[in-house]
Image 1 (cartoon, rainbow, N blue to C red):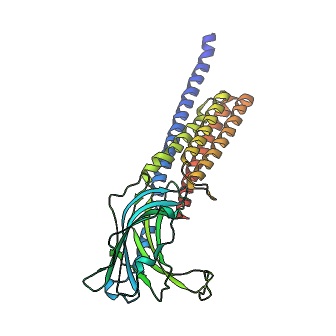
Image 2 (spheres, rainbow, N blue to C red; image 1 turned 90 degrees about the vertical axis):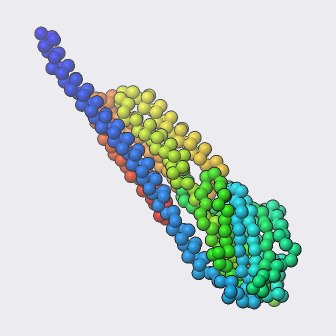
Image 3 (cartoon, rainbow, N blue to C red; image 1 turned 45 degrees about the vertical axis):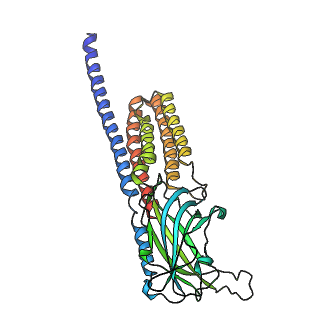
Length: 371
């Protein structure tokens, strides 16, 4: 008689177990799908802006170029060969470069190679130069030519807002501060700039460099009575675009965050009665993310803004904390109102929390890249 009475209960328990197992499989699939969507979204969105900045630089350069055959008496054609970029240091906003600078001009009364100077040197004592020839060389068209080899550190503000993605511009700026544009004016041509194809620095991909010339007026007379703040000088900028490798940095920085968040999401798969296990899982995920953030920030300067990676870490930490609070709350529900209700709350929390996380995570990357 007792066996007959227990049979319906056993059947009900078996159906309940099958239902819970099926529900758990669906939740695990949803979690895996969320991870895949995060990864795909990161790859596609991180690659979004590449190319547009380089195109804009090229257009700006073509607008400021001038063929050699139209050189005036006070005009100096300037060109460069970028032989090597030895290092890039985001902490000091500087980079080491090895370049050849050559000049070509018609006016015999000026010596631009003596008055030309770099205006964005970093630790000027590091600058070294080698004269390829002692005096200018006469060219077949009657112009004069002079070539100098330089090695030194240059200052260039590196924007890390989109780090670990985005692009940077390494700039070398040249001026003739002794003569205004009425006495000496630099002109450029796309064919006057080249870069060594063997340049390689871990963590950066190099784009096509550009060269441009513009007039620049300093907002000071430099203390000279015969100077005015309207004095205009000719400035040349050599811009070398560098891009953080997208796919590599996704696997180095984004994928580990996604994996930790998947592990943290398993808090809702732990039975509500396992109170201590839920807390241990979330605390471990929090500490792991904090350690990862410290490691990823090595070699970066202290900025007045949050990088994209900082924001992703901060958002993930807040989300883990929120899921921990929800997990503890559901455990108390299991104690006071029964485990069945707590399991339903876990199922709903898993869907809501991690769907929201996937959407906001992707939108944050998208927002950083487009702003």
